[in-house]
Image 1 (cartoon, rainbow, N blue to C red):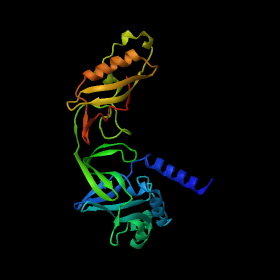
Image 2: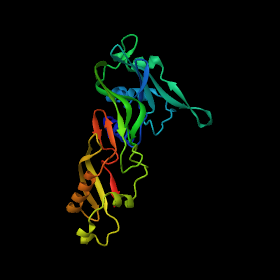
Image 3: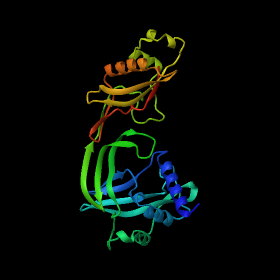
Image 4: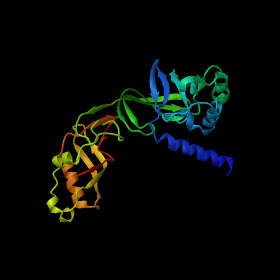
Length: 281
């Protein structure tokens, strides 16, 4: 196996690991205020990414919430995105860790093509970055799959800011299959008895289910409006077997119920806590 193939596989594995658990993200300062940058812009240039990784001492500490092993610090000034520093964790006594910065001269060497004589300009970067602050409204234990009260999508072209879309996100309370509405892993879910009370199916219409103790439904393509009504969804009977008629009846009952919990996220209404759920009846 050649060196290029090994590097490609390593980057793929890093990517897979990143999306297997929630990641911390970088830090960015905008108008003097700290935001979380949900992503790692350095990784968009694989050469820079490898050089940064090679600059970190082998004894650095890698934690599950930061598989890359480092955190980059950024700032935006006069519509230019700058890389200010890169920090990693080094082992200390008593099983503790201490933050350590890659030396400035090392960073200047790694980013020599983007050093303007004073600072490192993110000239390799084109596309959007997502930044956030405030309370977390929704969290999924995977990569950067979470949403905050305040988010911005900042468009970058060769290190220069070309546009900003700012959003104030919020939730409206209502029913959700996950009772806390924050995560799709480890949540307390409603019981089958509660589900049967809320959505009374006419099971007598389905004699083939007479001996079934549990019916498993899945929800896909769920959409809610601002009033908490479920305006669309795709229901499927997973167990004991696909049953389009029963699935259609459940879909109508769910659409008739209100209110469902509503998430207003980055300009659209989302059915977190409904979409991609399986529930037992």
